[in-house]
Image (cartoon, rainbow, N blue to C red; front, top):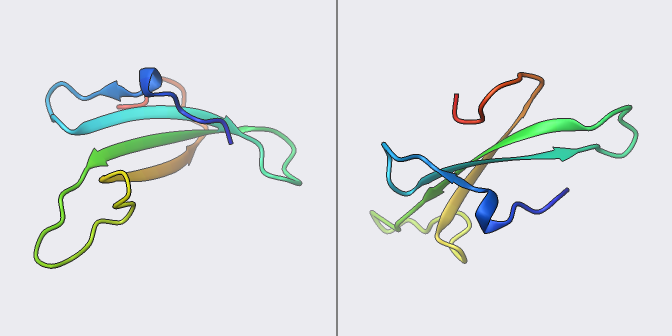
Length: 73
């Protein structure tokens, strides 16, 4: 999978600490690459629970999509 450079993340101006990005990826055995939409959110540990991906303090949620248009939408 391609890496998303820091410059490729688009910050959500209405929600500080939230960014959107995308990559194209073709899994082995699949006939074509697919669009993966990414949502990255800055997370803080709370209530004694650790943050998934705590090394970076971020949570990233991928979604495979065939939709066109802006990632945030």
